[in-house]
Image (cartoon, rainbow, N blue to C red):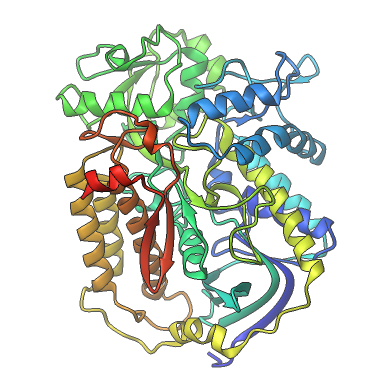
Length: 566
């Protein structure tokens, strides 16, 4: 391996190639920028979008009268008073144009009588969520955006590229330092503007619905570059992630659209419907929002009324075979291959880490508080408040991605090409080139599993001060064990070194989530505290996280709550 880094110049660097990153790349290129799209996995085939099998919330109003204002009202209600109203409005207002643009590019939204059709989803006041067919919405969106990128010669793509740190000089982001997984080579990227589109943090949890590269990289990169994070305590747990029997080759959250199409019944281990005990009698319809459904299942299990594997039953046994086939289509055959017959048996489901409402603080142009740095998609915090409305995730990726790409291109036109200075890249290059080192703590994969267990058990759907304090102490101990120098070797596909960089980011992000959850002494949306069960008006504030002199600082908590927490 050469000791000299590879140097790349570009106008706009986009980090992450889900829907947000790909749309940002397309829009930046359409606005005259030279773009480099970098991802640690295969371009357009990693992250959350390609795994999303459900619906996209958008007020098209083609079948049922609808407006973006109505969509906005439902988004604000779901956010429990914490939505950034500017970002929420942007999401709802620009969503229809993005959906129609993707239709023009060939997504092929499901249609009925010549109109794009829409279906109901939890938390919406009318059918508003568009889809492709059965469980192919995310793959169709990803394929279409990959095709749109391929048509634009101004977009270069680099897979297997792990971003180690953003380059910051004189308070402004001027690119990034990375290493190439396939060779171990260091790469210095000079960019006039950088877009973070790295997705969320669900890999922090033992059971999660996203791909293995969703470990919160973007949050950690932003923190170390001097940016602010907000709402980090709000992790959304999808209530009906598949638990049992074994399901191979299918998304664990695939049950959601079929439950609200068919009125799938949630039953406890005694085969009793139970959601009425927790604030909603569903009456055969899927009307319970995700935070309430998660709470209800968790409490039934805690009370000893869970299903055999520690969740609840989801039953479609009241539906005819014809109704199931009409709703599920070829999915019925794939379920049969897994020995699941929905006319004769329920499946077991349980909450699973699915989405993160918090993230990098950004304005309506998607600019962060560090010049030259923009954010897009799930890595952005604030738009969804304390609980994301069903269907808003891909909408957010499309709207924020397009806006970030446009803003980054505009920023790039105003400045000259930066030249990375040795002092701004030295620390990251030293990490990449560090000599082989054997860690005293041993297996890095085991350390990842330890962290995931800590987060699942201590910072899960139902929290207490005691659980959170123990988790925070455990995270601090793991960070001390990890140390400041990477293990493994600077060589091709050295997974030990990759996992050291992963853990460096994951532990920083886990600390931010846990510390803000401990500080928020109330229950609101996806943040449920057993020891503080009410939602308090003084807590209608965004907690902000910053890294100062190597220490995490939390700002924004009300004074009275700080006194309570201490």
